[in-house]
Image (cartoon, rainbow, N blue to C red; front, side, top):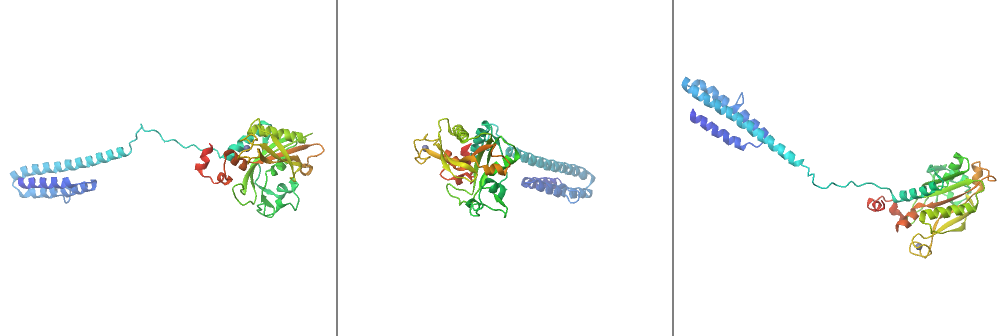
Length: 341
Ligand SMILES: [Zn+2]
């Protein structure tokens, strides 16, 4: 019996050495000390056939083997668990001495930066900022702005019609009408916003672009006030040395109307690539508010007069940042936009 137990121990040690997982360790335990079919459990049952003397010695040895089997399997399971824990800790290890990754902060779009700069100038000159709808009726888009029935601006080739009666606004001048309807003169408002025209996109055109427009209505306002205001506005935007000139022009909602040019912010008027050698850059339209426009909103043109002037932000933005193509401003390529923070 003693040889037999020695043999069993050797067999167990060999099988134990081959165990590689918790599951295999569980199977090994069942095979050796399982209550129903364990090898040692079966061996115990054979003890009854031995003489009392032999039974005592063999029983003690079998029990000892059984205990050492349990201890060995528990020990193996424990070492598996310890190994798993060590691996997990290694995986979760954080090297606190490594430098942190910088969080990329967002920033404003170049057109937004320019719009805010212009809004700040208007506010510093006593203007309120107005916001308004991008979808307008013909009344706001055309009629109230004194744009005649047959004017090309009304054509579907120029304007985005949504329905027979609604269109995307083609200029921020629509805001003049809203502002004058909402409040009584005297008033000073500036209206920045998106406008829409049926242009084919190219380096200098886009069907959607940004305008900002200033409107002032009060008693005794003259062309001199318009010129003085625009000159001051341009100096605050481009620098104190900037000069302005007015070229007579026609817009249905003003009388008289004028185009505004200012001396190039790059060369100061000497001529360079930005101003195409002329020394001057076009800013936008202006004029004295047409009496018909005042009448439409119930303001007496005998008592009040006013002026309006506006500029496009997109081409100005392109000039200021030296962009060859305004479409870059709408492509939302972060690699391009992040240069303007
Ligand atoms: Zn220039």
